[in-house]
Length: 136
Image (cartoon, rainbow, N blue to C red; front, top):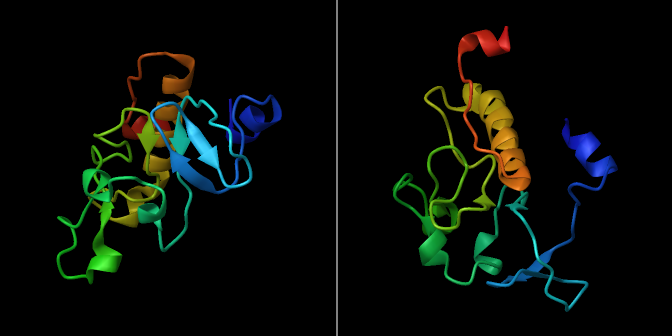
C-alpha cells in the first residue's frame, strides 16, 4: 500500500498546523478539541520550527551533531538515527537523519520510515529488509 492509497481510504489524514501536543492527543490551530492519534509525521520544512509546538524542546531537540552551526539552526530532533524519536515511541522526524552517505541514503530512509510508521499504525512488528537486493 502506498501513501496515496492510505490517503484515499482515509487510513491517514493530512491535518493543519499543530497548536499543541498533549498526553491525550493533538490540538490543531483550527479546532480547539483534543484529537487522538496513532502517530505524527512532522513535515515542517527547512526551518523546522519544532520549538513552537514541542512543550519541552530540551527533551526532544539537541545540538550534539552540529556544534559549528548557530543555536537556532543546530537544534535537531533526538532520534534513533532512523527518524524515530527515542523520547516518544510514536513520534517521527523524517528528513532529519543522514545516513553514512549523507543525502544518498535519503531514498532508503524514506522507504524505511514509511514502512516503520505503517507497521506502528497497524500493530505489526517491524523487521526491515535493508539488503541491496531489495532495491535492484
